Amino acid sequence: MAPVTTTQRTVLAGARVVLPSGVVEGGRLTVEGTRIAANEADEHVSTATVDLAGHTVVPGFVDLHNHGGGGASFTSGTADDILTGVRTHRAHGTTTVVASTVTNALDVLAKQAGLLSELVEQGDLAGIHYEGPFISPCRKGAHDEALLRDPDPADVRKLVEAGRGAARMVTLAAELPGGIDSVRLLADMGVIAAIGHTDATYEQTLEAIDAGATVATHLFNAMPPLQHRAPGPIAALLEDERVTVELINDGTHLHPAILELAFGSAGAGRVAFITDAMDAAGFGDGHYDLGPMKVEVLDGVARLVEGGSIAGSTLTLDTAFKRAVTLDGLPLTDAVRAISTNPARLLGLDDRIGTLEPGKDADLVVLDAAYDLVGVMRKGEWVVRPD
Image (cartoon, rainbow, N blue to C red; front, top):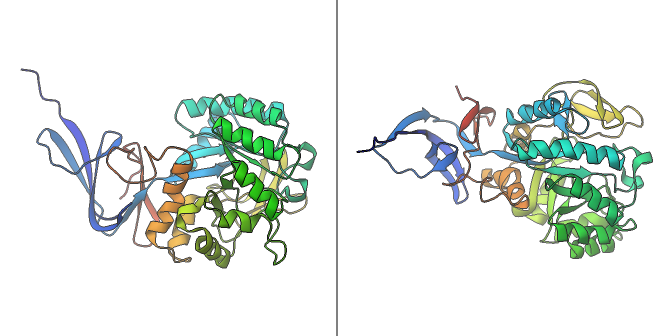
């Protein structure tokens, strides 16, 4: 008779668990190998129990828009630099991260994409997001105006193909020459077309959405404000059910009333919290590079040395989550949708991540009673072990 194989299971017991169906008090979550398992008992399974009474367990965070962290850049660093940034954000609960570039010459971006795609293939990154160079000089933010260009579909295709299947999203200003054709191209290639750093009118934004755009890059930031006779892109992006809106919930990029407006207009099913983080996230104040641009971080706020524009953020998603449920008063279920479920769906990974359900990857975050992070598990392995 063949020997019986004993499998190791870990049971997380006693915590408040946020599931797609709602919040379960005193819940029980079972992890087997790299996956979440059903809670049935099995005599051939060796079980270790972790008591998490007084804690909250939520799905691992998913960041669609992130330029680096831990003093390292996704936009210009080596593979070791990129992994430093990944590990920094992973320790803050982001178990899935898309690496965002910043405007540069096409050949430079294509070279960066080749390196990033290798880390996607290894499973360290979930994809590549090109933020620029196809954006408006009127709304350039922390991008080098000299390197901006119109979104010619041939150039857009070149960058997507440089990612060797790893490109997940391209931010562009659809009102520029070639913009609408590029949106159609991206939709045909299965890549998210995101509207951002744009000076588009309401009508131009609607045309882009009809052409296949499905994401608003950091809504409200780097686009015209709402006006009563010129609603601009914000109104179009908020009102259309086909669009998911990114929000940077760091208290610097958005006033709490604007966050409330976004959730009230779009609903929790169409919001994705992002960091838009740069190198200083999880690292500290100082001077940094953001692509070819020089950045100074003071009191946790990143600004260009020349001109003073906000240059991304120093945010980590555990801070965004805590702010959402404490200061902003969002229900736990809505915060989880915005920080895990919705971005997982956008990436086409919701069969594996984004919710705590049997069969999915054991990616989860443990929070204490004050919603401070005390534990992170990724694919069944503790990144941060709860005390």
